Image (cartoon, rainbow, N blue to C red; front, side):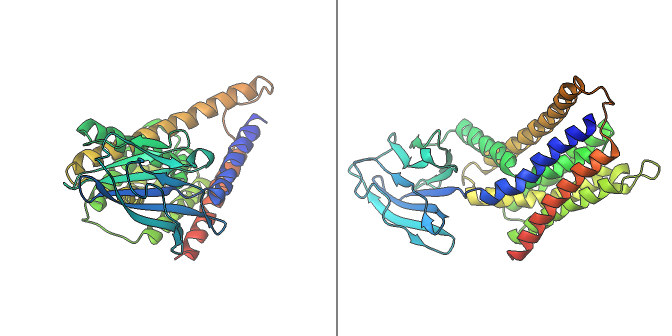
Amino acid sequence: MIDRIVALALTAWLLSVGAVLGHALEPGFLSLKQLSDTSWQVVMRKPDVQGRPMDIAATLPVTCKAPFSPVPVYDGSAWISSWVADCAAPIVGDTITIDGLVAQRTDVLARVEYRDGRFDTIRLTPDAPSFVLTAAPTAWGVLSNYLALGFEHILEGWDHLLFVFALLLLIRDTWRLIGAITAFTIAHSITLGLAALGYVSLPGPPVEAIIALSIVFLAIEVLKRDPKAPRLSERAPWVVSFGFGLLHGMGFAGALTEIGLPATDIPLALLGFNLGVELGQISFVIAVIAVLAVLRRVVTQFVQTGDTLSAQAFALTTYAVGGVATFWLVERISGF
């Protein structure tokens, strides 16, 4: 009984993932490119909400001419505003705000490009809708910013997390699990670096589809699991996780390409982003293990049965994982 309750709780959570993603709003984007000491090229990208631009606007300091976003134009996927802000004085040290963001359920990524080629990246949220324009991002600022971006990206990347979750279902041996996750980490770190530096390039949509396929593959491997005849994915899970990790790294690189890398601090930004991804991944694994332990302990107080997931419970959870991944696969292929 306890196994079924735990499995049903996991299944409900997994099935909700598809619904959450189906209603998730895309992030907004703000670009500030310095043209002179007092002049900036501004581009604001607003997500589309039922055929209308999201009710947000970039506001520059009042010393600038045209400090507000002009009327946006729809480009087929989002609403774009572009203008040049001429300011009476340098605006370094002043505050840039995304008005209306506090009432939204999404974020805005701000990218500031300076005349000397340096640039800074800031993530704005409903809780923190503004930032102070700095004179120059420090090394620690670059590292911490990209670490935070990597951490947030992996925790918002449900497909990557679901792959790791499927590994947790498949591999029962602790050391093999550690080896598989380590191989996955090494693999996606390699392709993340190579792709971000421009040495490797693959189209985004097929990569995203194969990432979904990798989860379907692991779900099938879990369902076909036979303790008397271990499959390759169980005997040498690091081989499977390394191969698919190379593709997941391309997915991470796609997100990093959208963010951009600072021309003068590329190694530091790559290190920060990758560390953030790893910290997020480790946090997820610890959280899943902790939740499972708590669920078992809580339910056991009411139902005195075994404390391991039954074959039926594993099947139920695995079908949920495979079902969500299959939905993503079909959706992504249809979007080619």
